[in-house]
Image (cartoon, rainbow, N blue to C red; front, side, top):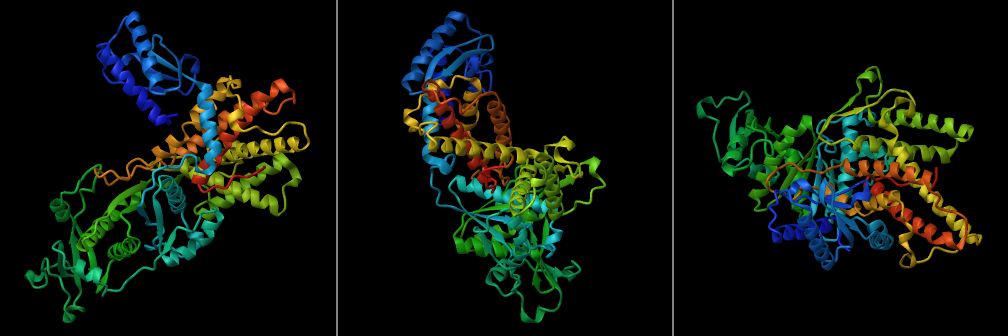
Amino acid sequence: MAAPIELLGVIEKKALETFNKRNINVKKIAVVRKSDRFSSGDIVIPAGCHEKQDDTVLCKLRETLFEDLKRSGVPVTKISGDDFNSVAIYLDRNSIFKETVGLVTAEKERYGLGKEKKDETVILCNESLLKCGKSDNADDISLEDLRSFLMQEHITHLLQSQSYNVLQLVEKKRFETLKSLFSQFGTGLSYFVEAAADTDTDKPEISEFLKCPYITRSDDNGKSNGGKYKTEGTCERPESEKDIGLVYEFDMKKYLQEKGLTVGKTGFDKNLSMCEVFSCDAPTELLNTSVLINNIIKDKNAKKCLHITGQSCAFSRQKVHLILQEIVEKNSRCISQKHFVYGPVTRRQECSDSNVVSADDLFRLRYAQLRQAAIMKYGEAVHGEGWAATLEALTAACIKFEMLSCVPRNTLKLDLSEEDMEGSGLATSVGSFVMYNCARLATLFKHFEEEVECDTYPPLPPVSDVDFSMLREEAEWSLLFNYVYTFPELVEQTVDNVDNCDTICAKIHTQKVCQMLSSLSRSLSSYYSRYHVLGEPRAQLLPTMYARLYLLKAVHQVMINGLASLGIQPLSQL
């Protein structure tokens, strides 16, 4: 069975061929996968895609398309149409249920990951993980820094799902400062490369870079003194000149023009011009950072570098990009660099008097809110190490959903009021809702196994023996078709243009997995409250129970895999 993207591609190709055979002028073919109201088709082609035709022509077209799709292996049962859609395709649900659930059962945690093995290493350079003037006090980690760390963790998993090797660059002292925060949020540390900031002025990379034709040398007042100190292209530093306050600048405007690099919306900032790279007999922070990244790239033989930066630092990271590019090219190597830029973090207007200013403040606030909610539900039972560990895991999950559900370039506005989560009326409890529904399924499967051990139910048969035609409810088809079947497509689409040479901007949709898990949890909660899964152990009811259990096992696996991409370990019970 074809994957979702491939399936739509096959249908589009065959539909276009059929329209052309019938001499029907097509404006632009659009094959749309529906997400609800499946009684009028699973996949449709809107009537506005082509010139108006009479019913006889459209009927013949549908008959021809049906035969073509069947021959191409598309699991279709019938094709009809209505006033809005000239083609409405109904898929063979039983076939798709069996194939998809069988695939999820076989692949488990590998489901949704890329099949193509890429022998490429991507270096992630997060300006918040390189010291760059950041505080060494863990209590001073800002909310914007926290957003960048959580985004980087998610991006790491998304790139790995596309079969990239990923290394995260972190300055050694900064790493020690952040270690407790990473532990608090369950952030994996196995991909971090420790690299101390390098200020050795005699490093060959620095001396070679200062000889490039785009370097201008002047005194520390910015004057050329009638050309006495100002030279271009051969900026070597004689021993006698070390103490006379020379300043070296990189002419980025000239560099952009001569290299033919794109300037504007999809390229570099038009205001890039002279950039100071060496002053007071020492390299600047920008040059140090560029050399540091270059050393890692050379050591790991990496071909790609992704700069993760806030909007306020995006301009300076473009300077690092150009300096690094010149250093790499002078060593006859090449590197593809992209920029992932995220927006600032602010508080909602009604929370202007909140004292939450750091990542640690936010964790304490969310922990207190979740603990209060647990006490209201479970009473005095909420105490002890077990509950503390559960609440810490839920707190980390809630904050991750809160930070990652927003489109990355947008400003993230947090609700920092001290009201309980439900009372605030805001989406701060999405993470706990997803975790609850995931734990609910784990509890269901555990209960089923206990009943099997008590001989209440027979054991679950192999998936190949299950009759999925028993799943007749639209809610069941929606769970599979909208979430399980399309999960690999969603993961693939989160990483959009890391390899695109036409722009320096990386489009990585860090909000998509969170939004999918939130929507899936709402659909699952609605289904679970309406339909019984473990019913009476009567022979005629067992086929439906088995089919539903396998469907929910597939849903559960998708939730586990989605949470894993966020660095969240699901709970077995709540």
